[in-house]
Image (cartoon, rainbow, N blue to C red; front, side):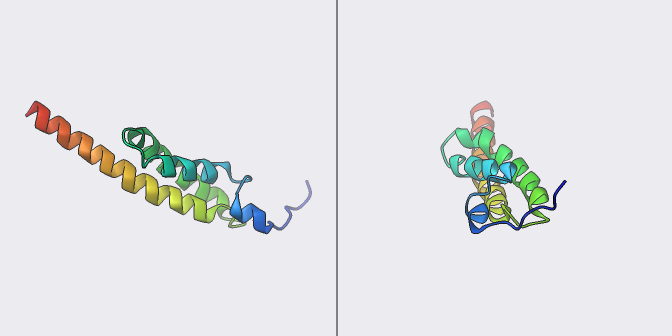
Length: 92
């Protein structure tokens, strides 16, 4: 197996070689949408963590992975908190 090539600038802009980071980024962005954040927020955090692990040797996708964790945690977490508060209010 040949040694890995040095990542290009485009690898950092669109990290196609780090699919968990790229998917997590899109999940995090779309977790802004109401109700979708309930599913996509946790998926963004999980994908972001996996993307960070994959980015360690080259750094490709690190920014996308961090963005996924922040957006997914923030917007997904807020939507889950609102869902729980609404459920408690309706039930109680």
